[in-house]
Length: 498
Image 1 (cartoon, helix red, strand yellow):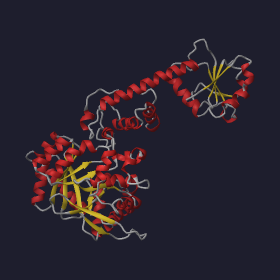
Image 2 (image 1 turned 120 degrees about the horizontal axis):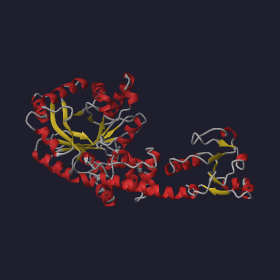
Image 3 (image 1 turned 90 degrees about the vertical axis):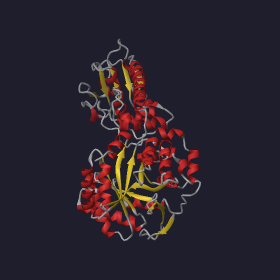
Image 4 (image 1 turned 180 degrees about the horizontal axis):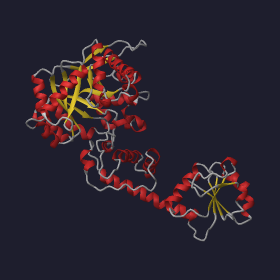
């Protein structure tokens, strides 16, 4: 490890950058690597915006970052171009990592063409680290390594001096990573690693370390799960004032196998925050073991939102469902948190049942190897249980078949929710429901159903209402006092509760 004192950030602050060996390559790389897939679309869509992104890369290099990771497909194909704009302006040494994917470049010739295109885009004579990208399983690995396959193309490019080190990135399990490492074809590996999936990845991390490979970690923040739920990751922090994002980066850097922790950055604020994570930090401390003692084994069961599971043949949005299941896990399996996420965040209908055909395609793609099929069954069970409770609740308000002329008073968010539940339980019923509100602006409108018009409170007796459901939690008692005269006419007042 080398500590380098780097230029101030423009506000007088001096940062220390940590450097580590990249396996057996002899290269010293910065503990923080710049991931080139998080530039904002509004930036990379214009020339001015691309220049802004390039300046961020240059600033990162000034602050000691020397490992820059990109790919041909990142940011709509513009990431390598942006890197190419930045490299001539960098005054310090830098290393670039880019990639080729089996699905895009299935043979040696295609990989060679890809390498030449990447070099041209970035204005470089050679690529320092070239990755066989996104290996999900051994079957893909074998296709990459076969005669005339992508790996052969990378070897040809290496012999020609176009690349220095052949590496791979993987989302397969630890046993598969270990097999790939032991075959001896690579000098480095990029793995999705964070405090959430540490148990699942550990075998692969140890195999890479034992095999002398440089290890780059991506997805350090768990696809946003960690900063999105800071209350569940307080154990990462060194003290109360520590920052969750910084702590997550330090956790990765503390692993003895890790050479580089990648972070995708799109603003100066993010860059300075991430660089400062390594200020006054000793990766050789006991911090890593301390965090692992505190972390829950259940962390390995969370979806990181990578979206490799996309493409369900039955049209299910697996990524969304699994992220909602995260809420179920975080809340100690509280179905209300799960359902709230489904209905509010993702806007699924309350009665939506997710029709899984159990083909297993998503489970094969899952980088966490989650039991997706079983989780969808759990989600459907929660939805069905909620529907049973909803029907029972609606029977209380609407289910008396002898009851006619029911009114809803107070037409706002609560009334809308009541209507949605009514619609689910009584899809073919729409008559004998009347709406009332004392707001004159609402009279005559039909905000819930085209056949349900809002009337003035004075019309309650006119329509011979027998039951009036009041949808106003804050002013229920006040409304009851205003309508007390109706009770004499045997009109039943009921409060709608969530």
